[in-house]
Image (cartoon, rainbow, N blue to C red; front, side, top):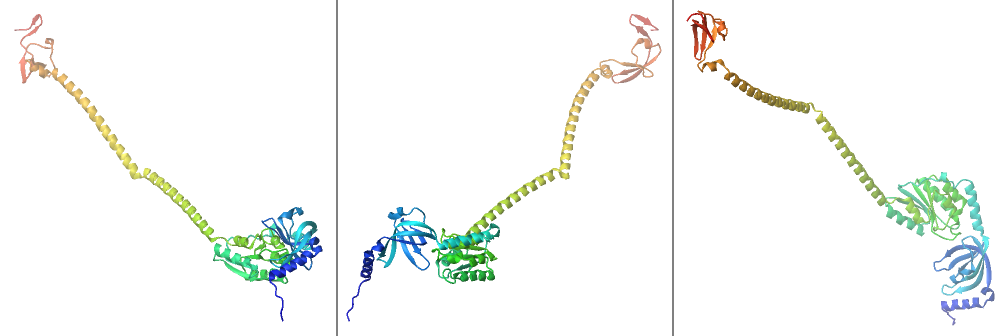
Length: 407
Protein backbone atom coordinates (compact mmCIF):
# COMPACT_ATOMS: atom_id res chain seq x y z
CA UNK A 1 0.00 0.00 0.00
CA UNK A 2 1.45 3.30 -1.11
CA UNK A 3 1.59 6.19 1.36
CA UNK A 4 2.64 9.81 1.10
CA UNK A 5 5.87 10.62 2.95
CA UNK A 6 6.70 14.26 3.63
CA UNK A 7 9.81 16.00 4.76
CA UNK A 8 9.83 17.77 8.13
CA UNK A 9 10.15 21.10 6.38
CA UNK A 10 7.05 20.35 4.31
CA UNK A 11 5.05 19.48 7.41
CA UNK A 12 6.12 22.58 9.30
CA UNK A 13 5.44 24.68 6.23
CA UNK A 14 1.95 23.23 5.94
CA UNK A 15 1.16 23.89 9.60
CA UNK A 16 2.52 27.41 9.26
CA UNK A 17 0.20 28.08 6.38
CA UNK A 18 -2.73 26.82 8.43
CA UNK A 19 -1.87 29.31 11.19
CA UNK A 20 -1.43 32.09 8.64
CA UNK A 21 -4.90 31.47 7.20
CA UNK A 22 -6.58 31.74 10.64
CA UNK A 23 -7.70 35.37 10.93
CA UNK A 24 -8.10 35.25 14.73
CA UNK A 25 -4.48 34.26 15.23
CA UNK A 26 -3.24 37.28 13.26
CA UNK A 27 -4.45 39.78 15.88
CA UNK A 28 -5.13 38.28 19.27
CA UNK A 29 -4.79 39.52 22.87
CA UNK A 30 -3.84 37.03 25.59
CA UNK A 31 -3.69 37.62 29.34
CA UNK A 32 -1.30 35.73 31.54
CA UNK A 33 1.62 35.81 34.01
CA UNK A 34 5.15 36.51 32.76
CA UNK A 35 7.70 33.76 33.34
CA UNK A 36 11.35 33.24 32.35
CA UNK A 37 11.65 36.79 31.00
CA UNK A 38 14.95 37.55 29.24
CA UNK A 39 16.07 40.86 27.72
CA UNK A 40 18.51 39.72 25.02
CA UNK A 41 21.60 41.72 24.00
CA UNK A 42 20.13 41.90 20.49
CA UNK A 43 17.28 43.99 21.84
CA UNK A 44 14.63 41.26 21.59
CA UNK A 45 12.55 40.19 24.62
CA UNK A 46 11.92 36.48 25.17
CA UNK A 47 9.38 35.34 27.76
CA UNK A 48 6.57 32.89 28.48
CA UNK A 49 2.96 33.65 29.23
CA UNK A 50 1.20 31.24 31.55
CA UNK A 51 -1.88 30.64 33.62
CA UNK A 52 -2.71 27.93 36.17
CA UNK A 53 -2.51 25.09 33.61
CA UNK A 54 -0.84 26.13 30.37
CA UNK A 55 2.03 28.13 28.92
CA UNK A 56 2.93 29.71 25.57
CA UNK A 57 6.30 31.04 24.49
CA UNK A 58 6.42 34.66 23.34
CA UNK A 59 8.87 37.03 21.71
CA UNK A 60 8.85 40.79 21.14
CA UNK A 61 11.36 41.89 18.54
CA UNK A 62 13.47 45.01 18.96
CA UNK A 63 11.50 46.80 16.23
CA UNK A 64 8.31 46.39 18.31
CA UNK A 65 9.79 47.56 21.65
CA UNK A 66 7.91 50.84 21.29
CA UNK A 67 4.82 48.83 22.15
CA UNK A 68 5.91 48.43 25.80
CA UNK A 69 6.34 51.33 28.25
CA UNK A 70 7.57 49.45 31.34
CA UNK A 71 10.27 46.96 32.28
CA UNK A 72 8.70 43.53 32.28
CA UNK A 73 9.74 40.95 34.87
CA UNK A 74 8.78 37.50 36.05
CA UNK A 75 5.50 37.48 37.94
CA UNK A 76 3.97 40.42 36.09
CA UNK A 77 0.41 39.95 34.90
CA UNK A 78 0.21 41.32 31.35
CA UNK A 79 -2.01 41.47 28.29
CA UNK A 80 -0.06 40.65 25.14
CA UNK A 81 -1.41 41.63 21.72
CA UNK A 82 0.10 40.14 18.60
CA UNK A 83 -0.01 37.12 16.31
CA UNK A 84 0.47 33.41 16.83
CA UNK A 85 2.74 31.87 14.20
CA UNK A 86 4.81 28.77 13.60
CA UNK A 87 8.58 28.97 13.90
CA UNK A 88 9.20 26.47 11.12
CA UNK A 89 12.84 25.76 11.89
CA UNK A 90 12.05 24.33 15.32
CA UNK A 91 8.50 23.21 14.58
CA UNK A 92 6.99 25.20 17.43
CA UNK A 93 4.38 27.86 17.57
CA UNK A 94 4.78 31.00 19.61
CA UNK A 95 3.25 34.40 20.04
CA UNK A 96 4.89 37.41 18.38
CA UNK A 97 4.03 40.45 20.54
CA UNK A 98 3.32 43.89 19.11
CA UNK A 99 1.97 45.45 22.32
CA UNK A 100 2.22 44.53 26.00
CA UNK A 101 0.08 46.14 28.67
CA UNK A 102 0.79 45.84 32.37
CA UNK A 103 -2.09 44.13 34.11
CA UNK A 104 -0.70 43.94 37.67
CA UNK A 105 1.31 41.32 39.54
CA UNK A 106 0.88 37.59 39.03
CA UNK A 107 -0.28 35.11 41.63
CA UNK A 108 3.20 33.71 42.33
CA UNK A 109 4.67 37.17 42.74
CA UNK A 110 1.90 38.13 45.16
CA UNK A 111 2.49 34.91 47.08
CA UNK A 112 6.24 35.64 47.17
CA UNK A 113 5.73 39.15 48.55
CA UNK A 114 3.19 37.98 51.14
CA UNK A 115 5.58 35.34 52.55
CA UNK A 116 8.52 37.75 52.42
CA UNK A 117 6.62 40.37 54.44
CA UNK A 118 5.45 37.78 56.97
CA UNK A 119 8.90 36.30 57.58
CA UNK A 120 10.45 39.75 57.77
CA UNK A 121 7.97 40.76 60.46
CA UNK A 122 8.91 37.59 62.36
CA UNK A 123 12.54 38.77 62.37
CA UNK A 124 13.90 35.92 60.26
CA UNK A 125 15.78 38.38 58.03
CA UNK A 126 17.28 40.36 60.92
CA UNK A 127 21.00 41.07 60.77
CA UNK A 128 21.60 39.97 64.36
CA UNK A 129 20.70 36.40 63.42
CA UNK A 130 23.22 36.24 60.58
CA UNK A 131 26.15 33.98 61.41
CA UNK A 132 29.61 34.85 60.06
CA UNK A 133 31.07 32.59 57.38
CA UNK A 134 34.29 30.95 58.69
CA UNK A 135 37.36 32.18 56.83
CA UNK A 136 39.12 28.81 56.73
CA UNK A 137 37.00 25.68 56.28
CA UNK A 138 37.74 21.98 55.83
CA UNK A 139 34.34 20.66 54.75
CA UNK A 140 31.77 22.29 52.47
CA UNK A 141 28.24 20.92 52.25
CA UNK A 142 26.21 21.55 49.09
CA UNK A 143 22.46 21.06 48.66
CA UNK A 144 21.71 21.06 44.93
CA UNK A 145 20.99 18.77 42.00
CA UNK A 146 23.68 16.16 41.35
CA UNK A 147 23.50 16.61 37.56
CA UNK A 148 23.25 20.41 37.28
CA UNK A 149 25.89 22.93 36.31
CA UNK A 150 25.84 24.36 39.84
CA UNK A 151 27.67 21.44 41.50
CA UNK A 152 30.23 21.25 38.67
CA UNK A 153 30.97 24.96 38.98
CA UNK A 154 31.29 24.69 42.78
CA UNK A 155 33.63 21.67 42.60
CA UNK A 156 35.83 23.32 39.96
CA UNK A 157 36.19 26.53 41.99
CA UNK A 158 36.85 24.66 45.26
CA UNK A 159 39.52 22.54 43.55
CA UNK A 160 41.15 25.66 42.15
CA UNK A 161 41.01 27.70 45.35
CA UNK A 162 41.81 24.98 47.89
CA UNK A 163 41.94 21.29 46.92
CA UNK A 164 42.21 20.34 50.60
CA UNK A 165 38.57 21.33 51.22
CA UNK A 166 36.22 18.35 51.11
CA UNK A 167 32.93 18.90 49.24
CA UNK A 168 29.97 16.83 50.48
CA UNK A 169 27.00 16.87 48.09
CA UNK A 170 23.44 16.14 49.12
CA UNK A 171 21.75 15.41 45.76
CA UNK A 172 18.45 17.23 46.17
CA UNK A 173 15.52 17.92 43.90
CA UNK A 174 15.60 21.63 43.15
CA UNK A 175 12.32 22.07 41.28
CA UNK A 176 8.99 20.40 40.89
CA UNK A 177 7.06 18.14 43.23
CA UNK A 178 8.96 17.09 46.36
CA UNK A 179 11.70 19.69 45.84
CA UNK A 180 11.06 21.67 49.02
CA UNK A 181 11.12 18.53 51.20
CA UNK A 182 14.30 17.33 49.48
CA UNK A 183 16.06 20.65 50.13
CA UNK A 184 15.03 20.59 53.81
CA UNK A 185 16.26 16.99 54.19
CA UNK A 186 19.59 18.00 52.64
CA UNK A 187 20.09 20.88 55.08
CA UNK A 188 19.27 18.64 58.07
CA UNK A 189 21.54 15.82 56.86
CA UNK A 190 24.55 18.09 56.35
CA UNK A 191 23.95 19.70 59.74
CA UNK A 192 24.11 16.26 61.38
CA UNK A 193 27.36 15.47 59.56
CA UNK A 194 28.83 18.70 60.91
CA UNK A 195 30.22 20.45 57.85
CA UNK A 196 31.71 23.93 58.26
CA UNK A 197 29.51 25.77 55.72
CA UNK A 198 26.49 24.82 53.60
CA UNK A 199 25.68 26.16 50.12
CA UNK A 200 22.01 25.84 49.17
CA UNK A 201 21.18 26.66 45.57
CA UNK A 202 20.84 25.88 41.90
CA UNK A 203 21.30 27.48 38.49
CA UNK A 204 18.97 30.00 36.91
CA UNK A 205 15.44 29.47 35.74
CA UNK A 206 11.96 30.91 35.71
CA UNK A 207 10.08 31.97 38.80
CA UNK A 208 8.34 28.59 38.77
CA UNK A 209 11.67 26.74 38.46
CA UNK A 210 13.07 28.55 41.50
CA UNK A 211 9.90 28.34 43.55
CA UNK A 212 11.09 25.58 45.89
CA UNK A 213 13.47 28.13 47.41
CA UNK A 214 10.51 30.42 48.18
CA UNK A 215 8.73 27.85 50.36
CA UNK A 216 8.21 28.47 54.08
CA UNK A 217 9.64 25.11 55.23
CA UNK A 218 12.87 25.77 53.32
CA UNK A 219 13.16 29.23 54.90
CA UNK A 220 12.58 27.78 58.38
CA UNK A 221 15.15 25.02 57.82
CA UNK A 222 17.77 27.61 56.78
CA UNK A 223 16.94 29.89 59.72
CA UNK A 224 17.04 27.07 62.30
CA UNK A 225 20.24 25.44 60.99
CA UNK A 226 23.20 25.79 63.38
CA UNK A 227 25.68 25.84 60.49
CA UNK A 228 26.21 29.03 58.41
CA UNK A 229 24.36 28.82 55.09
CA UNK A 230 25.09 30.64 51.82
CA UNK A 231 22.12 30.91 49.46
CA UNK A 232 23.02 30.77 45.76
CA UNK A 233 19.86 30.48 43.72
CA UNK A 234 19.66 31.37 40.03
CA UNK A 235 21.49 34.28 38.43
CA UNK A 236 22.55 37.63 39.83
CA UNK A 237 19.16 39.26 39.22
CA UNK A 238 17.16 36.41 40.80
CA UNK A 239 16.06 36.79 44.43
CA UNK A 240 14.34 34.15 46.56
CA UNK A 241 13.16 33.88 50.16
CA UNK A 242 16.22 31.70 50.79
CA UNK A 243 18.45 34.67 49.92
CA UNK A 244 16.86 36.83 52.60
CA UNK A 245 16.84 34.26 55.41
CA UNK A 246 20.32 32.78 54.81
CA UNK A 247 23.45 34.03 56.51
CA UNK A 248 24.90 35.24 53.21
CA UNK A 249 23.51 35.62 49.70
CA UNK A 250 25.64 34.85 46.63
CA UNK A 251 24.51 35.92 43.15
CA UNK A 252 25.45 32.54 41.64
CA UNK A 253 26.62 29.08 42.86
CA UNK A 254 30.11 29.89 41.54
CA UNK A 255 30.20 33.09 43.59
CA UNK A 256 29.06 31.10 46.63
CA UNK A 257 32.06 28.78 46.28
CA UNK A 258 34.34 31.83 46.03
CA UNK A 259 32.85 33.21 49.25
CA UNK A 260 32.98 29.91 51.13
CA UNK A 261 36.48 28.71 50.28
CA UNK A 262 39.55 30.80 50.96
CA UNK A 263 42.14 30.77 48.18
CA UNK A 264 45.13 28.90 49.60
CA UNK A 265 47.46 30.87 47.27
CA UNK A 266 46.25 34.05 48.95
CA UNK A 267 46.88 32.37 52.29
CA UNK A 268 50.42 31.47 51.25
CA UNK A 269 50.99 35.05 50.10
CA UNK A 270 49.57 36.34 53.39
CA UNK A 271 51.84 34.00 55.35
CA UNK A 272 54.85 35.11 53.32
CA UNK A 273 53.94 38.74 53.92
CA UNK A 274 53.47 38.08 57.65
CA UNK A 275 56.81 36.23 57.69
CA UNK A 276 58.53 39.17 56.02
CA UNK A 277 56.93 41.61 58.46
CA UNK A 278 57.97 39.43 61.42
CA UNK A 279 61.53 39.16 60.08
CA UNK A 280 61.72 42.91 59.58
CA UNK A 281 60.46 43.57 63.09
CA UNK A 282 62.74 40.85 64.50
CA UNK A 283 65.78 42.27 62.68
CA UNK A 284 64.87 45.77 63.85
CA UNK A 285 64.54 44.45 67.41
CA UNK A 286 67.89 42.65 67.21
CA UNK A 287 69.59 45.71 65.70
CA UNK A 288 68.11 47.92 68.40
CA UNK A 289 69.19 45.51 71.14
CA UNK A 290 72.72 45.28 69.69
CA UNK A 291 72.87 49.07 69.61
CA UNK A 292 71.76 49.25 73.23
CA UNK A 293 74.22 46.50 74.14
CA UNK A 294 77.03 48.45 72.47
CA UNK A 295 76.04 51.55 74.41
CA UNK A 296 76.02 49.56 77.65
CA UNK A 297 79.39 48.09 76.75
CA UNK A 298 80.79 51.55 76.13
CA UNK A 299 79.27 52.77 79.39
CA UNK A 300 80.83 49.84 81.27
CA UNK A 301 84.16 50.57 79.63
CA UNK A 302 83.92 54.21 80.66
CA UNK A 303 83.15 53.21 84.24
CA UNK A 304 85.60 50.27 84.42
CA UNK A 305 87.89 50.62 87.51
CA UNK A 306 90.90 49.38 85.58
CA UNK A 307 90.28 51.97 82.90
CA UNK A 308 89.74 54.68 85.51
CA UNK A 309 92.90 53.52 87.33
CA UNK A 310 94.84 53.59 84.07
CA UNK A 311 93.54 57.04 83.31
CA UNK A 312 94.46 58.25 86.82
CA UNK A 313 97.88 56.59 86.54
CA UNK A 314 98.42 58.24 83.17
CA UNK A 315 97.40 61.57 84.67
CA UNK A 316 99.80 61.07 87.61
CA UNK A 317 102.60 60.17 85.20
CA UNK A 318 101.74 63.23 83.20
CA UNK A 319 101.77 65.37 86.33
CA UNK A 320 105.06 63.77 87.43
CA UNK A 321 106.65 64.45 84.07
CA UNK A 322 105.31 67.98 84.09
CA UNK A 323 106.53 68.53 87.67
CA UNK A 324 109.92 67.02 86.86
CA UNK A 325 110.27 69.24 83.82
CA UNK A 326 109.17 72.21 85.88
CA UNK A 327 111.68 71.37 88.62
CA UNK A 328 114.45 70.87 86.10
CA UNK A 329 113.60 74.20 84.57
CA UNK A 330 113.66 75.85 88.01
CA UNK A 331 116.92 74.08 88.91
CA UNK A 332 118.43 75.20 85.65
CA UNK A 333 117.40 78.76 86.39
CA UNK A 334 118.67 78.55 89.97
CA UNK A 335 121.88 76.88 88.80
CA UNK A 336 122.42 79.68 86.38
CA UNK A 337 121.74 82.22 89.12
CA UNK A 338 123.99 80.32 91.53
CA UNK A 339 126.78 80.19 89.02
CA UNK A 340 126.34 83.87 88.41
CA UNK A 341 126.40 84.59 92.15
CA UNK A 342 129.35 82.27 92.65
CA UNK A 343 131.26 84.08 89.96
CA UNK A 344 130.31 87.39 91.54
CA UNK A 345 131.33 86.18 95.01
CA UNK A 346 134.46 84.65 93.67
CA UNK A 347 135.39 87.89 92.06
CA UNK A 348 135.07 89.55 95.45
CA UNK A 349 136.64 86.73 97.48
CA UNK A 350 139.46 87.77 99.90
CA UNK A 351 141.35 84.68 98.89
CA UNK A 352 141.27 85.76 95.30
CA UNK A 353 142.49 89.18 96.35
CA UNK A 354 145.25 87.59 98.40
CA UNK A 355 146.53 86.01 95.27
CA UNK A 356 147.21 89.52 94.07
CA UNK A 357 149.79 90.09 96.88
CA UNK A 358 147.39 91.14 99.59
CA UNK A 359 147.01 89.71 103.15
CA UNK A 360 143.99 89.33 105.38
CA UNK A 361 144.58 90.44 109.05
CA UNK A 362 142.78 89.22 112.16
CA UNK A 363 143.55 89.46 115.84
CA UNK A 364 144.50 86.38 117.71
CA UNK A 365 140.84 85.66 118.25
CA UNK A 366 140.14 85.70 114.55
CA UNK A 367 138.38 89.04 114.52
CA UNK A 368 138.87 90.90 111.32
CA UNK A 369 141.10 93.96 111.56
CA UNK A 370 140.48 96.52 108.95
CA UNK A 371 141.64 99.66 110.71
CA UNK A 372 144.79 100.76 112.47
CA UNK A 373 142.55 101.90 115.26
CA UNK A 374 142.14 98.25 116.16
CA UNK A 375 145.89 97.76 116.64
CA UNK A 376 148.29 98.30 119.43
CA UNK A 377 152.05 98.11 119.47
CA UNK A 378 153.48 94.76 120.46
CA UNK A 379 150.09 93.20 119.58
CA UNK A 380 150.17 89.86 117.88
CA UNK A 381 148.05 89.48 114.73
CA UNK A 382 147.41 86.74 112.21
CA UNK A 383 148.25 87.31 108.61
CA UNK A 384 146.40 85.23 106.08
CA UNK A 385 148.25 85.08 102.81
CA UNK A 386 147.55 83.38 99.54
CA UNK A 387 149.34 80.19 100.50
CA UNK A 388 149.15 80.20 104.30
CA UNK A 389 149.07 82.01 107.64
CA UNK A 390 151.68 83.79 109.67
CA UNK A 391 151.83 85.44 113.10
CA UNK A 392 153.21 88.91 113.30
CA UNK A 393 153.88 91.43 116.06
CA UNK A 394 152.95 95.08 115.64
CA UNK A 395 156.09 97.19 116.07
CA UNK A 396 154.83 100.47 114.75
CA UNK A 397 151.44 101.98 114.01
CA UNK A 398 151.13 104.75 111.48
CA UNK A 399 147.96 106.42 110.49
CA UNK A 400 147.69 108.17 107.31
CA UNK A 401 149.32 111.51 107.93
CA UNK A 402 150.66 110.65 111.48
CA UNK A 403 152.93 108.24 113.40
CA UNK A 404 151.98 106.31 116.55
CA UNK A 405 154.26 104.32 118.80
CA UNK A 406 157.83 103.15 118.33
CA UNK A 407 159.77 102.57 115.17
